[in-house]
Length: 110
Image 1 (spheres, rainbow, N blue to C red):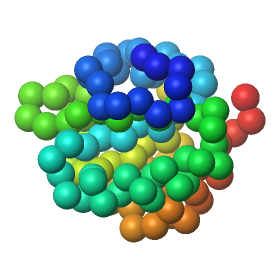
Image 2 (image 1 turned 90 degrees about the vertical axis):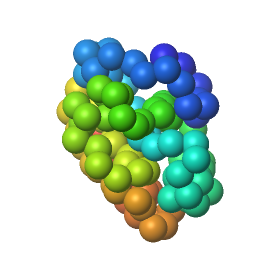
Image 3 (image 1 turned 90 degrees about the horizontal axis):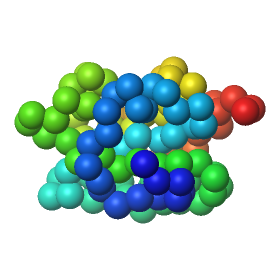
Image 4 (image 1 turned 45 degrees about the horizontal axis):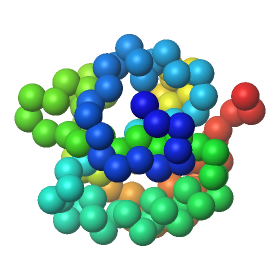
């Protein structure tokens, strides 16, 4: 996994690795060809600009991808904010950067 704020879509990590993270992470499930996912990119970037230390994992989802199924992802993009193995917020097809920023504001101090 990356320690950068944002990563390109990458190989699917194991669910146990996600649950074991002690630092906050924003999981972004989607597909590179998905129009909804492409439209959400500027919204996500704007919201994340206020959280430069937040890890952001873009995870390619689709048939046969277990990680997305383990989180019950049904529509793309789905953003899941995790901290210490706990889901703090979930956004499905967010419509604004403010909606994403509101979810990110729920981060707890380390």
